[in-house]
Length: 118
Image (cartoon, rainbow, N blue to C red; front, side, top):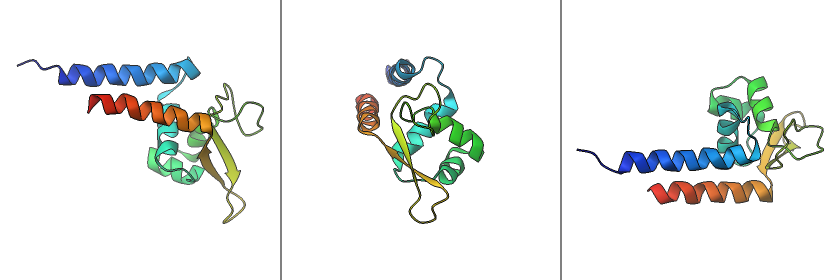
């Protein structure tokens, strides 16, 4: 028997992907995964991001840096301005990730999109 539930889930997924593409039309799955992990746990390090997202550290770093602030040495194009990286106060060598106010707004929009499918 056909139900609308799987279709609604796919529509929600497309809506979320469309939101990401509005920031970066060439966005990759790794970049999306990196941002979603940063949303789930602000303050995580690049190493922790890599472990959680099953990526190498260089891939995790490149992926999350595309969400960095424009003009930052740390960010890479397209520098969407959704995530900032600060030196880790516990060791001073690694970086910890935090969402910017714009990043929190995107997280909230994604939560609302997903919430509509529940």
